[in-house]
Image (spheres, rainbow, N blue to C red):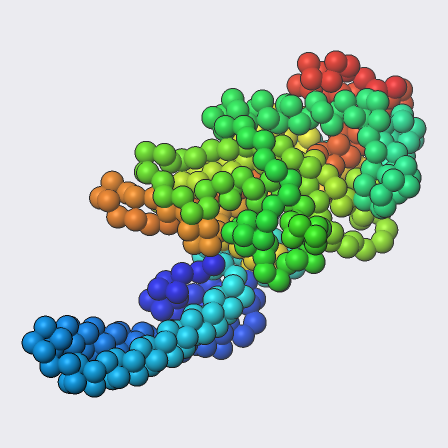
Length: 424
């Protein structure tokens, strides 16, 4: 959530940046917020004036009672009662205005970094680099959903029976490959100074609000209505919320956490090959990296996090490319996002496997996550997160890109984790 003071002091810049995100009615909403804030300030002054007058009368009443002027004191008491009624009216008015301001503020997306490309669709994203050699497969190569059936790695139909579409059952070497990737990703993250945490996969509404999933995005999450809890769409939510309502010291920063969780997303996909097999699931496994750091260091941190994710893809010997997302393809809360995509050789297309984002103060403002700098000044930290990595499309690309006429080769870096180097 944007800070109201920032909007007021930088209105034109805010509007300029929101235009990059193609945010409709930006000027109208910003003007409404600022007008409401003017009304809030006026109501606050009026409330303060009434309180000051009531406090002055209370002092006079006390002096009159001491001097025996009881009748005059009783008259002033009536006036004090009237003032308290006015005070309550102003307080109620203030609460109503503040609620209206909050209602509008949560509809405003984060302002993007000025380096974010303008555009409306994924086709407008900027290709930063492309790394690796696109593999050439043998003539009988098939997509991963056929490979998983052939080698009994994943049972999609059994998942439909147990739950529904988008909830696959991993079996045998398929299940071991999943576990191997999770352990490998966690080991690599901890070797880079990330602290591993194991967090709940159910969160309350406050946590959903803290990282920007709520309000207005309830439809994207599975909701346990009896307990009013939400299944997490990403480990970003509980890990970042660990610092909700926390005052940090500058010496605490940067805070680096990583964690593995299953993730749950209700998002509906279109039909066809784009959502077939592992391309889009309602439940999937992911290792997440999260950092909380000083504002002046957050973009350097973003690049470091992106480079770390790239190193994982290089270790897995997967061809990949980096995209800087355009304004129209960015998430609601992000100020700058890089997507990492791997090449799916059998499908002949790029598959997104990671998003690495800087949220600046957008989340920390909601979380009330602050720190005291070297001068003792309190300010909001910056939050960043990234997928390192999401498993389904990694598995899809590993299976497709490494298939041979005899079976599927396992990348060398994973063999110590899988215990096998070939699937046949």
